Figure (cartoon, rainbow, N blue to C red):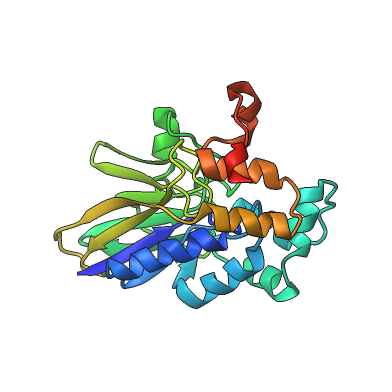
Length: 261
């Protein structure tokens, strides 16, 4: 049996990333896969890239890797400028080499990994989707076939949403592993996925997946963002403390509790 930790959407939150990897080690994970969006939004994208290169057997390209690695893109948003400048040339060069999809065989099941969808790292498919959108995850597309023909999956794992969930339709399993650095499903504890099964086995064998939620030192991460004068540090802090996306903060009257300052 092999145990695979699947992480996604770390977004420069090094405090969170270390907590997730430490938890995966304690649970005996044999390998770590990363589904992209390693940097951006948080203050230490470059260090998260370095840790990813050290610890992850494979990383799939996310939309933030596409944007932050492309120096030809004109950046006017101060946050985007800051997050791109925080990366090194080597970080950005590594981002450009990442695959858009990955496949493996686990306990007789073909498992596909993508960041957001089989259309593009930028095409977001929400938890409440159509049957057509569900079916698209299991289809062959230019993205999944970029490096040659790939098997039809039985299981698809993706990230991007920062919402952990799973569903099974007609024997096909779709899983979102949530975010290991910036959860936005209204549970501020970090989320990652553990897959377990017989690697490279064409025969049906025991197979399992488990969502893991991990608490971490939010105060420490917030302090780093403040000390580095990161743009949008307040919005970042409220997201980390509440698990609510920043576009909803005003509507819900969310702000940083005075006791946390």
